[in-house]
Structures are given as C-alpha cells and as structure tokens.
Length: 51
Image 1 (cartoon, rainbow, N blue to C red):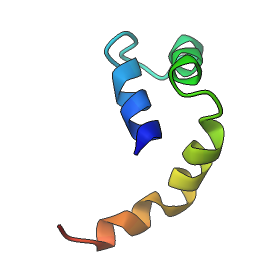
Image 2 (cartoon, helix red, strand yellow):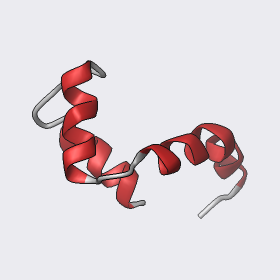
Image 3 (cartoon, rainbow, N blue to C red):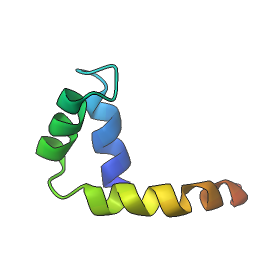
Image 4 (spheres, one colour):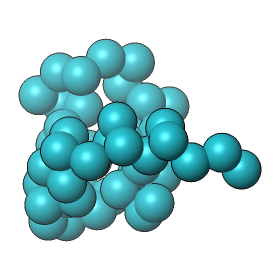
C-alpha cells in the first residue's frame, strides 16, 4: 500500500509515467521496485476480493 500511495502522490507533480515520475517515486519510496514488481505479478489477483 505504501508503494501505491507513493505512486499516486507522485502523480500530483507528474501526470505521466516519465523518467521524472519514476525518479520522484523513488525519492518518495526508496527501493519501490520490488513492490512494483510484486504488484505487476499479483495485482490482477486482488480483483478477486470484494470488500
């Protein structure tokens, strides 16, 4: 969840997925790549859960 929050906060400054955007995500959440990779692998599975 912290990675997702950092990702969305970065969009307040960069409304894209440019190199500058990813640099900002890295500044907000150093080492975010592991969480980004996990979400790419498992994110679709999260749609199975209804809250």
